Length: 196
Image (cartoon, rainbow, N blue to C red; front, side):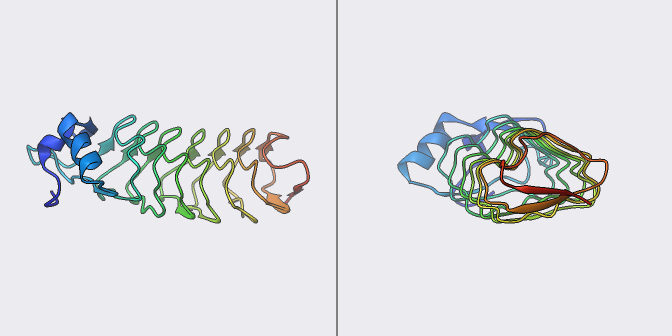
C-alpha cells in the first residue's frame, strides 16, 4: 500500500477492488490526486485479481498502476479518466466493455491471453499504435472507435471485426486475414480494406 492511500480508502470483496470509499473519493478530490497505485492485496493479504465494474470511473487520473496479479478488468473500470499511459499486466485475461474508454492513451499493448477486445474498451482515446498478442480472435463494436490510428496491422488470428471497431480513425488501407468476418462499417468508407 502506498503512503498516500490506506486500505479503508477502498471497498474490497475478496480478491476484487469494488470501489473507492467516501474517504478515498474525498482524499482524491481534496488532495487533487492524479496518480493511482492500485493496492496489490486486500487487508487480509489476498492478492487482487479483479478491478470491479466502474471501480475507478471518472476520477480524472492521469496514471494508474495495475498490480501484476490482476486477471480481470471490469466494465467501465477506468472509463472517463485522463490516463495517458497504461501497463496492462500480462496476467489479464479479460478487459471489460468500456474499460478504458474516454481517456488519453496514445498506445496500448494487448496482454498475451486476451482473445476478445470488448465493446468500446479503448474508444475515445488518442491511440496511435496497438501491440497485439497472438490470440486475439474478435474485435467488438467500437473497440478502437475515435482514436488517432493511421495504420493498423490486424493479426492473422482475428476472425471477427464488428461495426465501428476502427471507425473515426485515419486509416487509409488495412489488410484483413482470410476468412475474417468484417462488418462493412468497421472502418471508414474511404478505408481500402484488402483481404490477405
